[in-house]
Length: 244
Length: 244
Image (tube, rainbow over all chains, first blue to last red; front, side, top):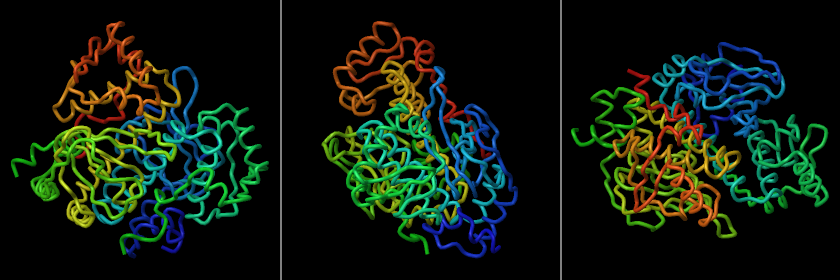
């Protein structure tokens, strides 16, 4: 059981619920079918049904919806500890596509295994509902970002959110984090052109707030960036377990 | 138990799971604290903590995030059968505000009652995770709408989604539905000005697709509207129970 006790998903869920040995064992069983997927090859296409879900343990994934005009809206990124396609399993048809940004490691979870795990350990089911609520809260923030925030605040909010999420699984902090995203990912996420993304990043750097360079985001002035973005991390609920 | 067997939430969850007598009884207990709330008075303000959740049984509610500049982004509307603030209970702090659009009836659900219900009936917990996944899929559609759809398609998609949701709880169909929303609600949802909303609605009406007048939406050409919006209702997963 030692491996899963330190899995990113376990770390993440532990922010909500103090997991018992039984719950850890059930969580371990969900990690049995370990697989690897290569970068930039779509894993699931929107409209597909009867898919498995995945628990991401290493690497980054991008979830998006493609429009018939060929453009895409990136809905969110998944980092270690996140589910891929959990929503799609329950809704039977995938409402989005996802593809690895780098080579990834993930455990495949069949619908029946997931439902069986819920039946065995309701606290685990509640913890996964918590994780789903948190994912929804992030999509809400992205909606508000595109709908109401100007480009600088939108970018700042997005980078701060990523930093907080990664900190929860031990992959970042208030100094910064490694980040494999390109300007095109940022553009399709924030509803900006790639040129506009570059301009915004340059301005944030020249204002001494954040530097995104060579695959690393450095928070040069974390407090200043929080202020610009009006970033309140309460929606990420990372302050310690509600369920003891 | 007869009353709750016909509650909108029961109708909705039955699209996902065939509920047993025990599960119906647990669902009934969640409906015990029945309350009414008057129109246009905020029930929960973003940033509040230690809130209850609610199960909406009659009327419409609006969920939104207010920005410091005074503008608001409406995230979604709740109709009978929907939870209010479910996400906020699990995340401890409400990430959004909500207020009734008309006078409403709702059952107040304490966090401990909800967690107890999950422990008693894991299938009910799974059904509520399904409902939460569906809510998230709707927010994703709203994000794609604001990010990628032109104003006509955005409006058409939104009205079709509402129609499908209401049909699930017996309050509408492919003919149309009663709708208490104003042009200001539509504007704050779709990221348009009220003037632009009026122009879009007039154009959709003149094209013989949909008429929104005197508190009623009439689908004049349902198929044509679906085509314009590229509306695929799979993300609402209303085709019959996955869990027998």
